[in-house]
Amino acid sequence: MNKKYNFYGWQNADVSAVSDDYPGISTPYELYDTLLNIWCEYTCAPRLREEWSPENITLGQCSITAFLVQDIFGGKVYGVLRPGGNYHCYNDVDGHIFDLTSEQFGDEILSYVDNPEQFREVHFQKEEKKQRYEYLCEKLKEYCCEENKEVSVANVPQKIVVLEADAAGVSFDALSKYGELVTYDHTPQELVAERIKDATIVVPNKCIIDESVLKNAKNVKLIAEAATGYNNIDVEYCHKRGITVTNARGYSTEAVVQHTFALLLSLWEHLKYYENYVNSGEYCKSESFTHMGRVFHELTGKRFGIIGLGAIGRRVAEVATAFGMEVVYYSASGGSYDVPYKRLDLDIFLKTCDIISCHAPLNERTNRLMDYSAFKKCKPEAVFLNLGRGPIVVEADLVRALEDGKIAGAALDVYEKEPLPADSPLMSYLERHSGDEYAEKLLLTPHVAWAPLEARERLVEDVAASIESWMKGEARSVVTEKK
Image 1: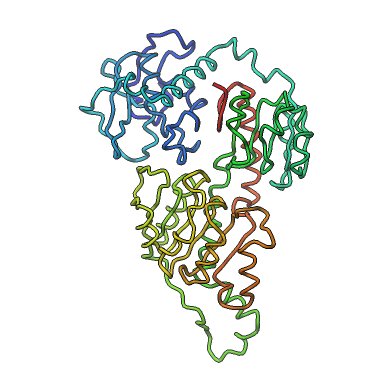
Image 2 (image 1 turned 90 degrees about the vertical axis):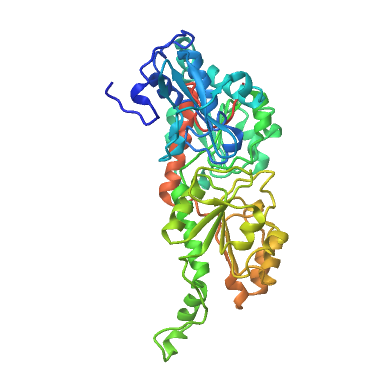
């Protein structure tokens, strides 16, 4: 064959299907190419979903994929024991050993010799795994069935409603190729239900999409979130209604990494103070060529702690390493990942990190994670950054920690409520300390880390790609879908 693949054993995966349940799938290569359109966050193992991304599409897919391979090509399934006691599954078909999901390990080399056989009866005792396997099989059949393709929603007129175009600041006109496009720059929550009542596709950003606004919107089939976070959508209700929900992923990774270090360097080197020193004219009066009114330190050798080691967290880790810092991480889910960084429990993490950078999603484990009890465990010279989700931080407790000297500084780009209320503890802190040294300890930006022009253009492209995939009957960036 001329095409080269990256999965382990691809050169020897020249076996033929023994099942005709999936028309058009006659080799593992055809199966792999098709699964690239089906693997998604939903099919990923729940413990790894926090880390899953389209760029690491095979993550958490091993067992359900290996048993599907067994369905189609026969043979046996074996497992490589991984840290934490889980088995990574792969296939052996008459001596042809291959692993369709090996790419998740990057450069790590697994041993595919003398591993124990794996049995679906054991793996599928976990109901969630059985459901993911059945979903994968169902989607593969739909993808392979020409009859299903002929009744694709691509042939049905769509009405697409964009609720908050101003949130991206770029045109959504590219979506007009998929149907009638209605675009609103901004939508107050009280107008959401009225504006989507005839829609089949809804594109929100921060508007709350729940039963109260969907109950009379009988035609809605797809909600394409124009953001990565989807806490504004009642996914459980959408699941019951058979409404597919997608989100946008990967479009802002480099942007958020860039902003993370912009905030860090500004805070770490007291740039606000030094800029004010020059702008005030004091430098012009100086008898020295320099001024060292605030002490700062090199980043090299410092411990950089990351909360949330997803796609953004891992890129932040790479940049921190380039600065010569020691990277460690805390996993709110308790999972360990195949990364060259040490995982610490929360107490050790807080007590030993010089910099703590939060990039975690908001869930029951991270909500209000950083409260006063957490901040008072930190090193007094530590700085804290939050570019994850606002409610991870108890803002009143952060202010108290700054004033009590429990940490040296903080920089935030996300907040408990957005826009930031004028009477928020953060704004009250800045007003209370206007002009004094404490004001320099807090740096706030208006949820803009994600927003370079290139990233916003990619966001629209990502939404368009999710709509197009849905119209073709394919799964892309699916959060929840009717079983």
